[in-house]
Length: 199
Image (tube, rainbow, N blue to C red; front, side, top):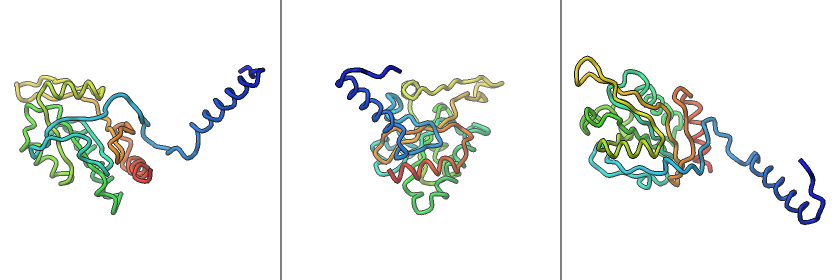
């Protein structure tokens, strides 16, 4: 790196250095998940919940929102992720009511509102499942950069779904902040949510 010789150049150089140091400041939260603050994707959703209510991120102001894509006949990843999220809520203690779990089905064909309502009750009664048309789901998946694909089974109704397994985390103002990989653990997510609730 060359040091500028004129006064204006030196001042600009010093300001750039200070800005660079500020970006690494310890005041910035040290999240365990991937920090995607300011991302140009996954900013909002517009689907109907399992109670028939239209939902968007604005409905959950004041809460940290965790969004996960899956389907009710998923044998392992989905129930594990939702059970972990329910565990996170318990770990948060009195702040647990500031966490909103959102499950977006990638299988609207089989996941009717009734099926989704029963499924969510297995994890936490406050968690909501969202469902849309095939077109709405495709648009949301594209906006969130999420992958899903139907995999044929032995009969027309015994198919399964391949899908992305991470979660998107929004702060209490409805801004996208984190992407947490499946398998990161309840403790890591609880720690990150506590940081978001403090900021």
